[in-house]
Length: 189
Image 1: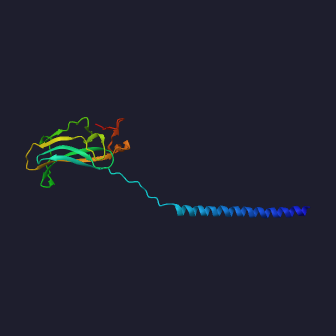
Image 2: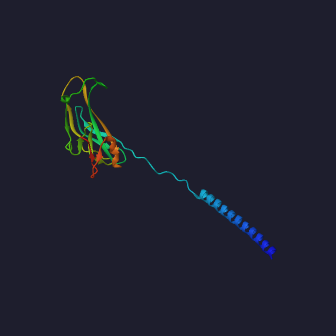
Image 3: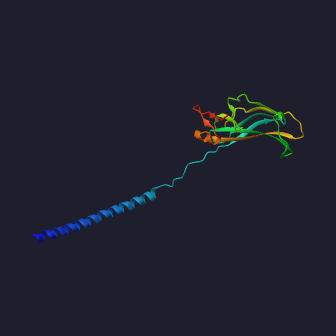
């Protein structure tokens, strides 16, 4: 009787081994077929991400003697905050002359929104406190600027404008500013 049990036990061991090997082969074949199917059926994906452009440009009228209606246009493709620096210079031909410009050499009439829509920061920049949508212009910063001295040089009021994205609001920290709950710039003064 012992002999019969030992033979039965060996046959069961062989069947178990054959069964385990068969299951492993089936699983390996299934994994291979799955990988082959995914490779054959997957379409090439392209990244649809496009970076935004944050740029601005000066808009002004100039009749040869008076610069007027100066505003800055958001020429980028996202809403931005805008600031500008006013740089008065004397020019000799196409070159900046070495003569210093005195505040008594010219007269500036600021736009109606100065003090509310535009504020002068402690750093000397003029800040448009409201975000400017893409393609839109700021309120008028300078209504007019005229020279009051004739010293043989040409007077030029250069305007250097900069823009920074409005979202996220923390982007304005690069200027040392913050944004209030209404989305307006908080400019250190």
